[in-house]
Image: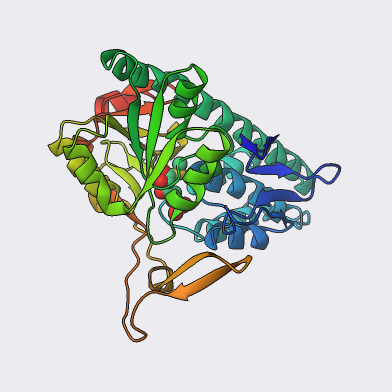
Length: 365
Ligand code: MRU
């Protein structure tokens, strides 16, 4: 997608330097645009943990490149496969909720395990990371294609009047490599001339909605309005929301959906107001081995200061200010899990599917 008219992906191999991976430091958006180089697996670990990159599909692709960077320093030895597994274990501990992280690490381990020399493994790890990146771009494009008819149907029912879509957090191209998950059908609708407007939940505490989704939509020229996180319920009661589309960080095989904290409350409000609640995600975000997302998905807890302080732009720089009494503590759960019964359907690269085990299993075919 575009930033000031230039097309970017969120991650790429540096030109003429295949040992360096470049990313956009998303902690600085929308105020500053900075490209950061990753040269080691430790650079990758920090980029994921400190959220220079974030969003489930992008975390996965970054981890695949991280495994490749880690392998660059391996010398030929008997226990190469054990060393690669150790790299994977370390990288997997950077963030717990997005299953794409494990998916990507396992993919690289699997593709390289039967090869003998370090160089052969490095070559295949690089190829695997590049392929995963290309696949996730195509997956998001297809999510857009498959989700578009859902928006079109509402537009037709409203006789071409604006379709109001509410989204939470950033499940846009910045969370992926291109297109986004929740935003892909939105971009497709905009491109095809369907009138849309997006309600953007600010998404405290890190404000990925206000900072990243709003930035993306603004850059693509899509009408949108930022709302405080508590506003969605009122808008739904007043008939000002036609549908909700969010992303996911991990969806279990029974259709329970982990997504950014606050998603569950939006699903409850949508259910109470008979508003369709869709979750857009690639298959790499489905944990087919997990049967009970509500009880089993690990929920990341982050530093309390992300709640106690807020960042913004003042005096030509990013500033951080304290919001709360100096001695008050805060707690910072990163995600919640929406039970399958509140999710109207999943929008995937394979099509739109109901949230039950039989339908979800069929996606694998
Ligand atoms: O903590 P983040 O910014 O990595 O969380 C990302 C999300 O929760 C997004 O909402 C998203 O839906 C998942 S990635 C497409």
